[in-house]
Image (tube, rainbow, N blue to C red; front, side, top):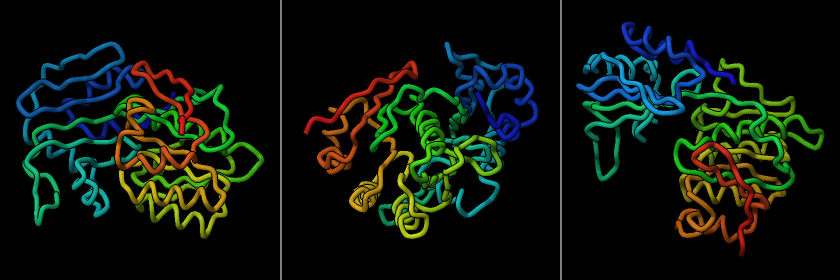
Length: 278
């Protein structure tokens, strides 16, 4: 297991770091900071509550440390999260700023959820890597972690290269030594739709991989890539294939028959292989 632990610890106010550091990287899955409440450490088998209660200053510190005052991080905050150094994602709740019906950001934050980015080489062992692969699961089930391992394995094969469109920098964070395979190229910081088009034009990949299909434009770009003869690797929020087929965004993908393999994740991080019936 690999984790950018120092990058995670640096997000926290000094007097919280010590207690979190004692728990160690192996067990910690999430940190939840709620205004006026004790810090919650979500572990593999439950939660540990620290005695320290969260202040406005604590929330501000984490947001500033995570964003590093960068324009890209500020723009993703309008979607309710910031991707911090090391690939750790900081989810934000508070008072939304809405203009012309569009959310522009969050003011007066009241809760933060820091999801710890971890790398588990080998968790995808046993999966057939031929053709296109779609990973399904609820939030926090390990979709990104499994996708990263499949990308790594595919990137070691001799039959072509893998182009990864890492929109949020969570699959292969810059400056973090998550091994990704010798034939893997990573494009970070642009939208999935834009990145897929760039990869097709410039990298000549045999596989394009993206994390979290969330928009119609994502689906359209993936189908365009597949029609160009490229295999796909992707993840989507869905409990199972039936749930996927019932969602408007995913219906075109489900009906396209592009994905030969669907891996459905369980809450215990295990996965099973299924096929989409057309």
